Length: 222
Image 1 (tube, one colour):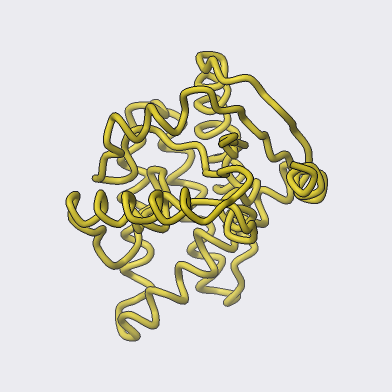
Image 2: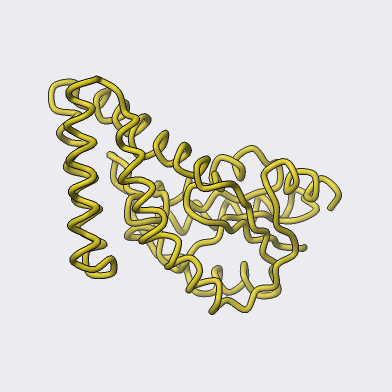
């Protein structure tokens, strides 16, 4: 069965695109984690054994369902605190081809604002109406501190400064638009260089690249 790895810069909408497709396995959904430094949910991830059992069941069910191909999102061995079993990871990637989803930076900022700020704040407030905003704020700061070493001290301080300015603006106006500043900085200064480095090291051939509509049409012909 052909296997396609859905790749692309952070914010292109890989997960949303993947979940619209009929022939896919959602590794991040099974792991209950978005697969990045900012990928934790309020609820904890499942235990490793529960994740492995759910993944094995999903793969067995998929293989017996007669799908023409398998599409899954590009992941490392670790998804949050969970590890993809080495044999499954190797089996998924060996002989696979990469599909690269591409969108402009402004759209990536829009998508990340929706995910990291608007939807995340709503989840935190639903979870804890009295302290949800503080919980969300602390979760973002914790994620920013987790990438301090890789980002570098000066850029980390700049990221924190932009985040604090966005918080003040939101408190004053009730709007989330100011968060675009730190999100754009995070994408271009942290995520993008890391992605390009990983792609340079990857041996997977690129079968197709394009925006969501083009990728959707290409997959429909498989």
